[in-house]
Each structure stands twice: as C-alpha cells, then as structure tokens.
Length: 258
Ligand code: HEC
Ligand code: HEC
Ligand code: HEC
Ligand code: HEC
Ligand code: HEC
Image (tube, helix red, strand yellow):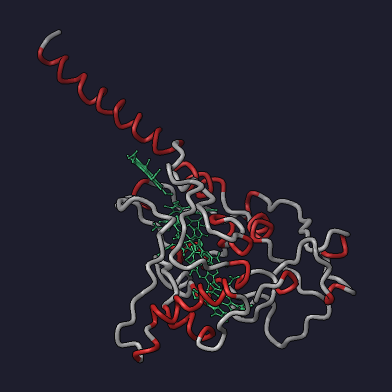
C-alpha cells in the first residue's frame, strides 16, 4: 500500500466506526427501561392522578409537574405543593400516616420550615447530557405524557416505560405523532360525557375531568359519550390518523445534538 492509499482508508474506517456507534445508539435498548426504584416516600400516583371512579383524586399531571408545558425540564413538585393538602390530610391508615408524616418532616413544619429540605426523589428517566430533550415542545404539540411514560396514573410505583433510545425518538419524528393513538395511550377520554356540565372546558388542567374509567361504568355515562356508547366503557374506537395529519418533527442530528 502506498503512503497515499493508507491515508485515504482512514476516513472510510472512521465512517464505519461512527456508523457502528450510531447504529448501537439507534437500536440499543437503553439499559434503564423498566427501571423503577424505591422512593423516599411511597408516593402512589393512582391515589392522586387515578380516576375518581377508582378511588383516585383525578388530579391533572400538570398540577405537580407544572413546568412540563413551560420549559425543557419537568422537575418534581416542591414539598409545599404536597403540604397544600397534606397539612390537613394526614392519612386514614397507620401506613398512610407514616408515609405522609415524612412529608411534614421534609417541609420542617415543626420549625416553621427553617430547615426545609427537598424530598430526595430518585430520578428515573434520564437521557445523556449530549441529548437535547425539550418537554415543552412535545407537550404543547399535544403529545400526551402517557405516549412516552405509559399510564402513570395506574402505576403504584413509577418505572421507565419506554426505551428512550435514539431510534425511539426518531421513529416518532419521522413517522409522525398520531393524536388519536396518543389519546388512546393516555387512557383519557377525549369526548366529554353528555351530562358533563362543570362549566370548565373538558380536560382543562385542574378541572379534574377527562379521565377515562375503563372497566368502571361511571354514573355520568348514562346517556354516554360517543366512545362509551360502543359498549366498552371508556374504550376509544377511532380510525388511525391519516399520515398527512400526523405531527412530524425535525430529525437532523442537530435537532437533538448540538
Ligand atoms: C400529587 C402530585 C403528582 C401528580 C398529580 C402527578 N405526579 Fe408524577 N410524580 C410525583 C412525584 C412526587 C414523583 C416522584 C416519586 C415517584 O416516582 O413516584 C413523580 C414521578 C413521576 C415520573 C417519574 C420521574 C422520573 O424521575 O423520571 C413520571 C414520568 C411522572 N411522575 C409522570 C406523571 C404523569 C404522567 C402524571 C399524570 C397522569 C403525574 N405524574 C401526576 C408527583 C405527582
Ligand atoms: C390535592 C390534594 C393533594 C395533594 C396536592 C397531594 N396529596 Fe397526597 N393524598 C391526598 C389524599 C386525599 C390522600 C388520601 C388520604 C386518605 O385516604 O386518608 C393522599 C394520600 C397520600 C399518601 C398515602 C397514600 C397511600 O395509599 O398510602 C401519600 C404517601 C401521599 N399522599 C403523598 C403525597 C406527596 C408526596 C405529595 C406531593 C408530591 C402529595 N401527596 C400531594 C391529597 C393530596
Ligand atoms: C415525547 C416523549 C415525552 C413526553 C410526551 C413526556 N415526557 Fe416526560 N420525559 C421524557 C424523557 C425523554 C425524559 C428524560 C428527559 C431528560 O433526561 O432530560 C422525561 C422525564 C420526565 C420526568 C423526570 C424529570 C425530572 O426533572 O426529574 C418527569 C417528572 C416527566 N418526564 C413527566 C412528564 C409529564 C407529566 C408529561 C406530560 C405533561 C411528560 N413527561 C411528557 C419523555 C416524554
Ligand atoms: C411520540 C412522538 C415523539 C417522540 C417519542 C419524541 N418526539 Fe420529539 N417531537 C415530537 C413532536 C410532535 C415535536 C413537535 C414538533 C413541533 O413543535 O412542531 C417534537 C419536537 C422535538 C424537538 C424540537 C425540534 C425543533 O423543531 O427544534 C426536539 C429537540 C425533540 N423533539 C427531541 C426528542 C428526543 C431527544 C426524543 C427522544 C428522547 C424525542 N424527541 C421523542 C414527537 C416525538
Ligand atoms: C430525535 C432526536 C435525535 C436525533 C435527530 C438524533 N439523535 Fe443521536 N441520540 C439521541 C438519543 C436520545 C441518544 C441517546 C441514546 C441512549 O441513551 O440509548 C442518542 C445517542 C447518539 C450517539 C451516542 C451513541 C452511544 O452509544 O454513546 C451518537 C453517536 C448519535 N446519537 C449520533 C447521531 C447522529 C449522527 C445523528 C444524525 C444522523 C443523530 N444522532 C440524530 C437522539 C437523537
């Protein structure tokens, strides 16, 4: 091999190496899929965000994760968000009382909050530092939380539902997000029951409405919404969104890596 040929081989090899790395990023299951660690307080999403018909409070996700529609990071609720209720709600069983008492300890209510500490929740979902993931862009484009996180309102303990690998991101960006699929994934009914007359638009954050009651026949479904008339309470029966109406997004490298 001449000196010159040797050098021309290098870009080729480099490209191969980069290709292999990208391929592994593209298809490799992120090691933390399914990861669901114990938390410092046994916080049950179903009790708070689950449907009222199943004993939940039907709270909107944004009540606690209130920057998901405003910034790149979602963040965890401040301890005072919990105390807004738990200063009064102390729990009805010994187990509940023990867990709820921990909130007041972090909030340091006994000393007027002088030594208040944030609750050290164990982070579950995390993309590497070199990846740019803006929650706000997704949430404002109407991508439901559950499309990516699964039906958290039913998880006694939150775990990582999606792989979060590069192929997973790009798949949706290229093929597009189907709002009807997203609605179905959410487990929320997009069609208000006929008797819904709370005076707030159905499903508005904070209105506690719009939570599907799969498997439960809610009192409000007597006259039924379109989707509930189909026999399976809460089931969403809709045709797939035509390809042209799907929400697509950029998939050039710089969109997610800069
Ligand atoms: C009452 C407040 C509250 C509400 C309402 C709430 N969450 Fe949470 N969420 C928390 C707390 C506290 C944690 C951390 C403890 C845990 O993992 O359970 C958490 C954790 C999570 C996590 C895992 C975060 C991580 O570390 O990766 C996801 C995802 C999540 N919530 C999504 C949702 C979705 C989706 C909804 C609506 C269906 C929702 N949450 C409603 C308080 C809330
Ligand atoms: C809108 C009011 C409200 C907010 C805000 C709220 N909770 Fe609750 N929480 C409740 C109610 C109501 C119960 C049920 C109490 C009962 O049945 O005695 C409860 C129950 C609990 C329990 C015991 C549940 C069980 O089944 O063991 C824990 C733990 C808890 N909450 C933690 C939290 C934490 C942590 C936050 C803040 C991230 C929070 N809550 C925010 C209203 C709220
Ligand atoms: C398009 C997919 C997607 C959607 C939609 C989405 N998330 Fe996430 N979420 C992610 C990814 C990816 C991460 C990890 C982000 C990171 O590491 O920067 C994450 C992280 C989180 C975390 C942990 C963040 C932290 O600061 O500890 C919470 C909580 C969360 N999401 C809640 C929500 C809620 C609530 C919604 C709906 C309002 C939502 N997500 C919508 C993909 C999504
Ligand atoms: C379920 C579909 C879906 C998944 C999964 C998804 N996205 Fe998106 N993404 C979207 C949509 C829809 C938009 C909004 C495009 C718009 O605003 O018009 C978007 C926008 C973005 C943007 C802004 C692009 C711009 O125009 O500047 C970035 C960056 C991004 N996503 C990164 C990611 C990353 C990183 C992941 C994986 C961790 C991911 N997305 C997973 C659907 C998805
Ligand atoms: C829609 C968002 C998105 C786009 C577009 C994207 N990536 Fe990625 N990329 C990711 C995510 C998310 C990861 C982290 C994967 C993981 O943690 O498993 C990643 C990881 C990587 C890695 C690290 C691999 C490793 O194993 O350490 C490389 C290299 C990479 N991407 C290259 C590229 C190149 C080159 C392009 C353009 C062809 C591109 N990416 C486009 C989201 C994206």
